[in-house]
Length: 171
Ligand code: IMP
Ligand code: MG
Image (tube, rainbow, N blue to C red; front, top):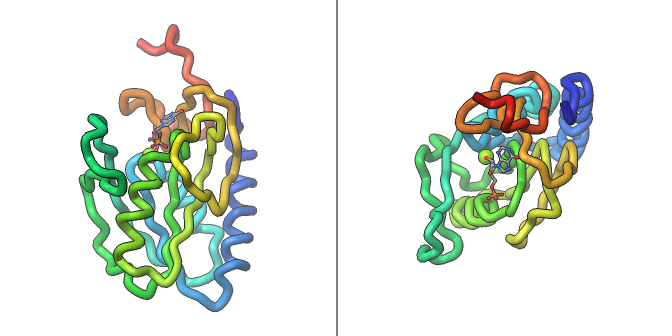
């Protein structure tokens, strides 16, 4: 176990309070990045006191490197129009930052009033893309983690805490 459930919930609640202050008087559109961001985005939304809309998006990066920067494969697009909206992307974890770097570029084109990024976990040691994270719950070391939305081969998302994967135990 790396982060117990109580610590996670406490930090997410604090983040919700901070976001409510920062967006006072505004309406917020939370863009949850599927699938890993779903537990975090839903818990966070519960602690935000300004009016909130939620929308969901599923993306994957092109792996082969032949695609130009700023492109990301959209597996499920948003239903909401972003124009003039205050948009906050909610991610499970920022690792290299490549996916989010591209996703931000895609969403900026849709002319939101503002576009910010919040993440439950950040592995800053692994960063290769230039990306500004506006809100982070926890910085973690370079380990493969699962739980609270994060998977290994689609398993362990339902763990209520963040754990480090033990490959010997996974079978
Ligand atoms: P990035 O483009 O390298 O930042 O990729 C981030 C994505 O990789 C995250 O949204 C996760 O889906 C996945 N990922 C990165 N690190 C981990 C981890 O430790 N556990 C589970 N998924 C991870
Ligand atoms: Mg993800």
